[in-house]
Amino acid sequence: MLDVFNSFYGLIPVTIAQSLIVSFVVLGVMLPFRILNFPDLTSEGAFPLGGCVCGTLIAAGVNPFLAVFIALLCGFAAGCTTAFIHLRFKINTLLAGILVMTMLYSINLRIMGRTNIPLFTYDTAFTFLAGSAANFAWVKIAIVGGLVILVVAAMLYFFMSEKGTSMRAVGASPDMAEAQGINVSTATIMGVGVASALSATGGSIMVQTQGFADVNMGFGILINGLAALIIGEAITGRQTILRQVLAPVIGSLIYYQLISFCLTLGLAPADLKFATGAFVLLMLALPNLRKSGGGSQIREKIRE
Amino acid sequence: MTEMLSIKGGTKIFYRGTQDERRALDGLNVTLESGDFCIVIGSNGAGKSSFLNAVSGKLPLDSGKIFIDGQDVTKLNAHRRAQFIARVFQDPMIGTAPTMTIGENMLLAELRGKRRSFAYGLTAARRARYREQLAELNLGLENRLDMQVGLLSGGQRQSLSLVMAVSTHPQLLLLDEHTAALDPRTAKLVMDTTVRAVEELKLTTMMVTHNMEHAINYGNRIIMMDAGKVLVDIGPEEKSGITVMDLIDRFHTKSDAIALQGA
Image (cartoon, rainbow over all chains, first blue to last red; front, side, top):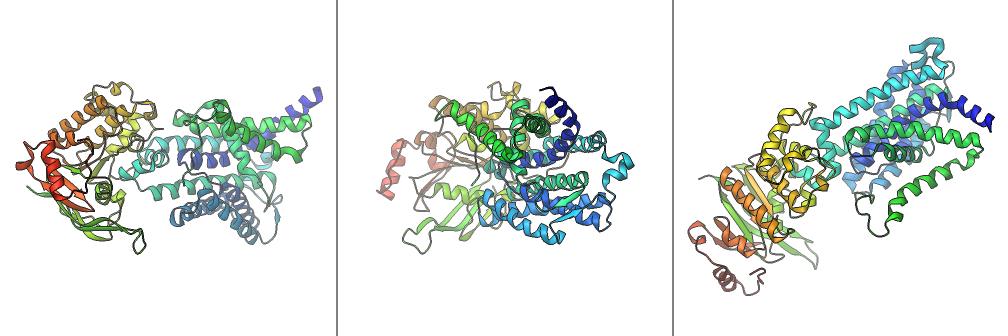
């Protein structure tokens, strides 16, 4: 038992670094689901898109910071596409997300020209900032953690600004938002776009820490993100915008430690996705199990 | 007197060319003078809601034109028209954002139809102003600026909706059976507040109602609709002194087919 704890303890820094990177994706899952009431699956495709774009550019000798920025823009475009498909052709949000995600797989392959690009020999944003210390977990934590704090602070401020309040109104009551002169379509497209941009940013950072870009990276990242979001919200609650914005980061930090703990305890990696899926299902079903029939307040609402 | 709202030849046909074709608005002509408080009545399906939705921009017309304050707004969609129009919905759940706070809802209303900036929203100055505006309701909402609107009762939410609508002095106030979902006591409270605000601020108002007492007691004009047209238009001179029985008589002489409710 002791060696289980020892190996778990040893993995903590690596896991923190990983969960901080994924917290971009969790923020990107939270924004459409919770703020816009727009269940969005684009993250599943935007995360590898960000990775593939960034990996390809770095391998081509482009400055890694510029590569991250371009990856972010590509993610933004992917999210805008999903929202546009939903708004323009009245296609269900989930189906629109699946369409974009599926098409992105081919696009990712086309961008890279092969399924995998190793980046070990190239300069990344981390080697730029930390030189030879770039591979230490705590260095990664400091760099990514700093960026996460910046992003969370920016989101917090935005959602309390005049523009951000309007975007939240679009999710809370689209009819009311429209009656107040808010362009519901624009707000939705921008919001889902930013969410996918966040996911793509996560992917672009991930390839630089793991040292390779792969077209299959982040398979199932959306369910992981959702699980992390649910855990985070169970801890912080959702009453204020501060809690809502903190939930993804806190949830991601805890969720990946839980996963790491389960793996060191002997959970087969093959069973991981099933376990995560079962967990998300349980958390979503719980409010309905507790009070059968009613439960109108917590019931998940899906915009048609 | 200037024209505040005018709809000319407004026509909207649902399911055109099918068996179910229905003329919701059939060459509708209505003009409201500035300061008019116009009550719109009529049986279900007469076109009241379509009229309101056409004015607000929710329902684009097939043909005809709409002018607000002299401007042709026919081609503007709903969120663009919001700069002229404030609206209170029948369902208290729709008119406010339930998961946002009272203060944030007031902020959304204050910025109706204006450019929204990246500046911080709920500033101290705004909070103070909202408290003042809410205090006039005597519901204690002024002390609950940070409370989620979803926790309020239907009557409180509808009162809040009304404050949000009138506090910005809209050129046109649309009330869509806004007391229909409330119990009689709360309905009276909301109605009294409505009348006070409309008279104080001299708002041009259009109120759809099924309540004949309200139609008689409030406003300076009654428009009775049927089959997407104006059936009877009772102006200010005639309206004072009219009774529920008179109204029903007018209804019957014009069309026996209309069934009146609430009379």
